[in-house]
Length: 406
Image (cartoon, rainbow, N blue to C red; front, side, top):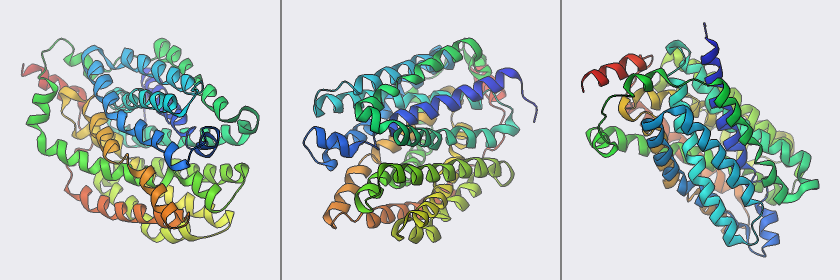
């Protein structure tokens, strides 16, 4: 696999951008209990902060995606990273729950932009034969961020408490300096830079079947990931009464499984195709469900979590490359991120829904986790068979063809 230095730098920057974005998001899920205690409210109420973050992510995907399609992937990525880092810091200064909810909503806008911009920049830059592996690597940034948040929680929480966790979240701002110094612009974007392109609405109308299908697919994918991750630390602390250190170790194991799954199935998709890799990964969840949700004891739960996230993030590992390959060339920085985050919007009810199901059954998080995870695994396996397969298309050449039609 031959790589140029610029291709390596782009891949590193996009991976770190999504890792640190996810890190800032997941810091919140570890401290729901503590925020609820300080603001004298219930965990269910605080969990609305997660929902608001997810609801606002499509706004960010649209804003930053359009900026990246118009002004370039590289400068937009820098602004985006700076925004989510600053808003994470400000979240730690919230004097009350209302302010925190506003900060997490604004953070959602910034978080929503990074994935689409970073994945478009990378997929348009790396060699076509490397896209499957790089897709798995990029998506592994999400559990990498979760793992990093878990390590910080385990190591620092007792010393810095929940506000300090948010203060640590300003660190990703340093990545802007790396992007500025080392990351080139996308060659596919350069090919279309001077050309008139149809507007977003016009392009979506022309591709309305693809757009609708992709939104439904990504809604299921977001229920798959958020339904298996967001309330998992609360499940460990509330239902199993593990101390923060044990909960952190189990969550670390979960995220190692997620990284392994994303890398393996991303690379596998280069051999067997994007659709079949997603199909196989999703269905692995079904035999794993009993161990993951209904076992007891730290070792059994850790094993279940490891295997479950091989399935969840294995399927997710193919998504960055698949969405970029099926995307219309004119709006590649906007389309993948927008359909992904619109799926997030529709799945944003997950955390409050699972919290409600659990509380209504006497804090039985096992049933809430299993019901969501099992259902969407089957739906994803069916839906993906109806997708296009465009493995290995030449994105720069395709962009040039579109530009020449102007």
